[in-house]
Image (cartoon, rainbow, N blue to C red; front, side, top):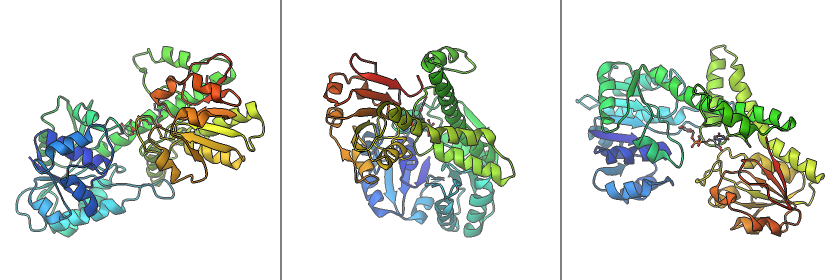
Length: 427
Ligand code: UDX
């Protein structure tokens, strides 16, 4: 099949490369010419494990890039909208880019004689495909739904593992208004061993939000239980390990700690809250999920103050800046509110992350960045562990370089050692 993918961000580029790997002919479309030049040269515009190899393999063969919507639509049978849906000031998603892409697609579709399907892959709140995207395409193409197909096909890709997740999905959801459009989209995935869930567009949109909101709820629930356990001198990891053995609960996403970050969980839960409120429903659980998550980093600093007292002029090593391990992404990283609070309290911050130092330096120009954990720990009065990087598990004698050997672990990463005071966030 011939596919065009609108947007060369994380979802668009990964999907394009994986569709090419599945044997389809793929055209990437982006108004940013520099990104298109990179795609055509086989260089990924974003970092994602395994993506460089796929682009190098398929660029100039099964994969190409253009900024010309008309060319892309004329030379493909189906177009995926994979553009960003940033959060607005109130947490609701901004649909400006989705609307612009829909208008350009509609315009390009105007003169096309053959059947074409437009698929929304961007994460959008329920009703968006039917009530926002479809009317815009109808307006600009001067065609009616049915002359072209419309579908919604959410992604469930973890950052860092996106290529693997695309190729080994545990579910594929396709929401379409009619069978013909849904069948065509389903055929694109015939190379994957996965059952396809067929729905209408608004149900597909909801499945995506519920998936992320449920995972975020598991984490905030675990953090709340962890906070209670801590006060009762109970190790919450022992509790959750046992609880997770119940097949109805499962062992995953029960790790308590400094909370969730990233480009999806905080944004998606807030967008679902906004949607619920817009229809007159007060989503109490979802609001608590966000509240617990926002309070969790502050608890790190609270524990630190309990141990050190006044933080003025204290040197605090912060290990981990990325929102999770194996990425340089710092969006909504729990390290950000922690560093802010440390600075507000007059502390000196000495930070280290294996990949995210540079990105964090754009937010905090006034802290020290180190090229190793050992350097960050030198003469520190305390160390806060903020990200679950594997290399932190191996740290040992590096702690001997601290002025005051105190560790506050926000990710259940370190094993308590002799001569070092170890404080777990929730255990
Ligand atoms: C998530 C979803 O997993 C993915 O399916 C969706 O498409 C996009 O959002 P991602 O944001 O890449 O993926 O990260 P994920 O690995 O899910 O972790 C999110 C955050 O939760 C991280 O900050 C992580 O540290 C935190 N987390 C995760 C916990 O605090 N505890 C856990 O038990 C698991």
